[in-house]
Length: 364
Image 1 (cartoon, one colour):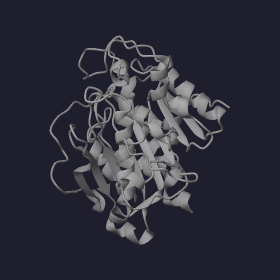
Image 2 (cartoon, one colour):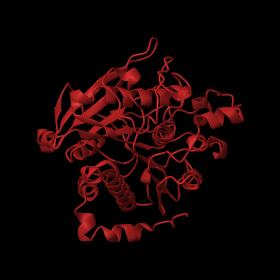
Image 3 (tube, rainbow, N blue to C red):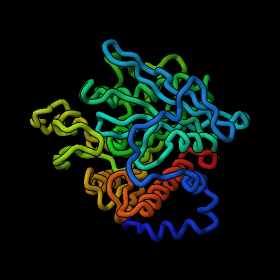
Image 4 (cartoon, rainbow, N blue to C red):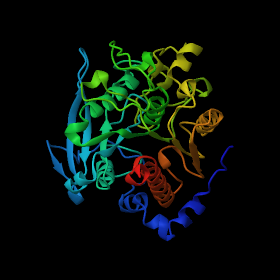
């Protein structure tokens, strides 16, 4: 059954209630500064080998997780929770995937959030191991390189579960825009051989969506996840009309979609579009999804979320869809106040969903 679109006023009104005000999502969203527009590349607020964040969180920037011949090393930023959580056992993992049209952006940027590493560190302070991953851009290597990289990052983290006190059975992935596409694709393509990292395909027996991975190496670790958050993502390339202009900050040139798919002349086949579309791989074994979109998105049509939501429901997958009225791509509203309110609502909702799916309360 299709959920009704939730009005932003109703959601914001709920924030006054005691239950919402006490949630991790509400606390983190309220403390996160929001700019008036999408944040441009600026001074790096997360440089160095080891960074101390508030509340006992430790950040490790630029940790290499994959090196492929002929390409730049792929790195991730890692945020570890306070030592006080060690007694509670292995910690759930959240992997964040940035946007940028598959050819820009970075692990320390997200929409209008002024200090994204601080947001991820605040989530780590609630007992999560959080990683923000980089991946190869479409001008470096076309699809499926980016999804193979994201999966390699998940595998690397699981392979090092003992090193970072990660619970390999509790992993969520969260992405926005192009990163929302990659997060969703990772969520629905568990054990799809053609999308696995590299040329070495390691056979696995049984239902790998529920089998805990080992620490025997990244090749033998699972890239499956137990929850997915998609913000204004691309889920069906066949239904996506070509953009008349690239996303903000992305150089002009071929369509971002066609460049990503490996057909910069605009001659992508139906098979190429289906191969890269999360909607192609939906089945009943997929993990729970939270899908969020702005009703006035001029970069990625809201219809993308509507189509994917319907496909997931048709297969019996647990999914929650929220459309925030009056906001464009990246939660940009018509006023700075509207941008702030939508951004905080999206952040609060995403974190509360993650809590419900893989947090300690969900484990019990």
